[in-house]
Image (cartoon, rainbow, N blue to C red; front, side, top):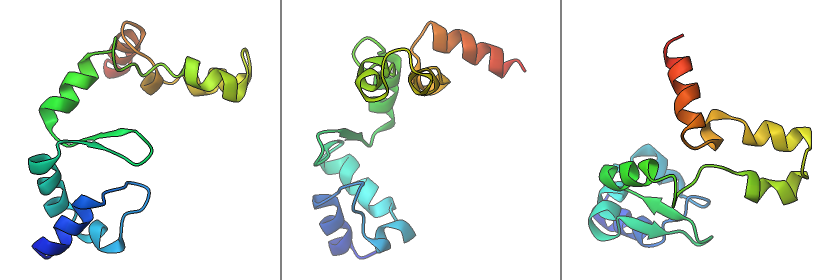
Length: 109
């Protein structure tokens, strides 16, 4: 990918609308994002993190960056519904200590 094209994609980066040429070689775009905008705000307000140390910090801070989706999903699926239970009991949607306990059980299997 030409540097100019990588810059253009990085400037308008949106996970929901990536051009086809991004998929064949995304690394120049990722490199530019890490250098110029390591925490990129997406058009929908979400944050896209590009540096490993930032990702590790977020992953380890369940107080500020919770994976628990009960608050978000309860209005969508209804309190007590089987869909709510299904979408909120997955390992990825749980914070420590439940996440840690279940992960240890799975890792030992």
